Image (tube, helix red, strand yellow):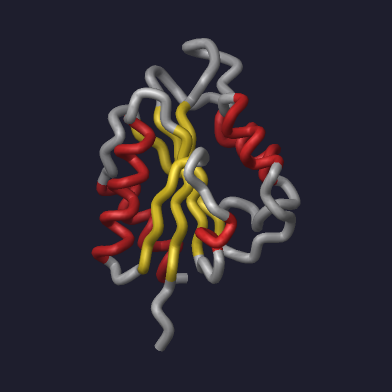
Length: 142
């Protein structure tokens, strides 16, 4: 049986999203998934080679209650990705007050790049909740 693999790519401003990426990676590894974690600034195209799952993450930018969106650097990174990536896709974000339109905006930039994101994870403090673990388990057990 082939080992499943995941790549986690994140953009973090103050370290909370980086922490969340690391927590996701730790959980995936505990479930037997070979996992790579990289920031958008250290990303290499080969980081995605053969990945069964790709997790894209960034922090929630925008006003406290409205107009949430990915930061410009994340959008520029996504725009450079090739189209039609075949890995199952997940999105994650960290936030201060709420995520609002964050996921719909992330999906908009990923359109035609990946499969529709079937998993959306969020954390206020960068910690992986039991609910998030259950959601990840559902994705990897499909």
